[in-house]
Image (cartoon, rainbow, N blue to C red; front, side, top):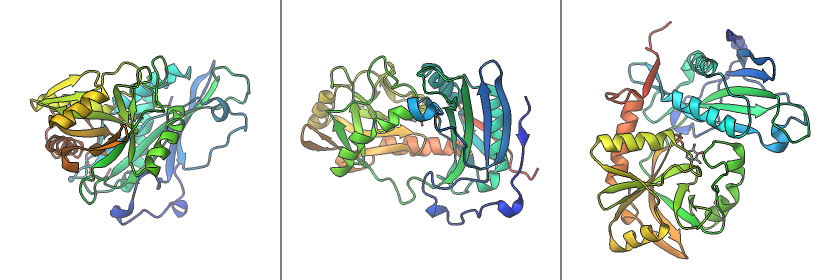
Length: 362
Ligand SMILES: *Cc1c(COP(=O)(O)O)cnc(C)c1O
């Protein structure tokens, strides 16, 4: 199938933001979007890049009632020579189909996904900001559109991709977060959907986030659902702790989202000679290590911020300071090294970058 391109008339194009320091996250979107449709028996059809527009949905579209909605998040980066890169996009494509499978949704054609995404980013390349840390955020989304109120896997789907410029997360330097360990609410249970990127996982996380926020904390640290004992994730990021000379992160046993950044951190840290352990880590062990002084630092990982240092943890009505509330050396090192790879400023020993334009006028 060929992807049709219907460009927005020039007179309808939006004004591009000029001040890159005011971009923020997820507020500005470009002039075009990619869409394609799926119908059982027909497969994927009508792949098109067209002007950004509102969606037309039947009020009984099944995504609105039973939550068949999944998404992804990745970025396109502009290097200093004008080249444009995606970072490990195949990982996001594969992960989205793992999510689709878990929610009985149509599997997305991987070639069309990649091609549609590349074509859209290239069409919108003038929207990609220039500063290191800024990027074009890419949001692929799949929703069930069949109009029916019976509970069953839908037989019609809409896949779309929207993109928009986002600012540097740490425009004014690292800001270590304060995290709140949720002992009452859980994010994901064994056998559930913790390992996929679905809207439902986010909806159910909001309540505990609000409690944390009302108490002055930035994020929730989730514990396992079975024993309420082991650390799992922080907010919508993966979590790492440095105890002694080891970098520790919980293993992927179905309740944790397999972050692309998490995997990149593990590979890069190993490459840098750091001992990395994927193993269960009890909150009691974390507290003990803090009290003994062997817990050196902690950080979260995710596409949006890359690395987000943790400066403080609230647990059992007590507040614990990590690394004096400051950013740790490893967090900073990993952040800088990953950014250099993403922006084409360093070798890419892992083959993570995908160049989609060499910056020359085409
Ligand atoms: C997206 C997400 C992450 C981070 O994944 P990346 O691929 O690194 O962006 C971690 N945890 C949850 C729950 C997520 O939704």
